[in-house]
Length: 192
Image (tube, rainbow, N blue to C red; front, top):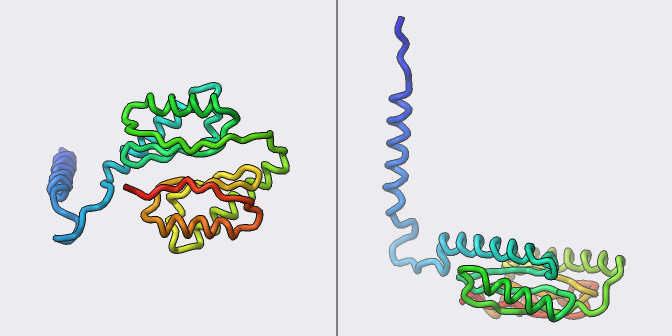
């Protein structure tokens, strides 16, 4: 008895699925007359890849404490924020980022740490950071997923790209209201 294989059917079904997928690629997904998105999915992916490449380049540097840095990218513009030990690390981090292909500009918002923090201060800072992030998440007027929060001895640094000045003002206001926050370093930027 000869058995029939389903292979030709599977191949045909697969080919039809691919053809339908490709045909759908050219169709607009937004209603006619709708404004184009400010940043395309491709740009978002490019920015994510660029951010990852920058973080890898910083990790490869022995004298840059890359875990204390925040890297955010928008259309090839890079915002560096966080706290480092000395000016040499700031200079080296900026030079490293500028050397990454695809970087158009670097906005250096790195701050110097000053004196070493104690274990208790580090724990307190982690708690303050968590409280600030939670407060930002709870506020519907703030795009909190676009905001990075770093705390050092109660000094909170907010960085990232948001839609407008009102979101910046609200984020600063929310962060100021969190217990344990001594001061705010506003390094937020409006998306261009």
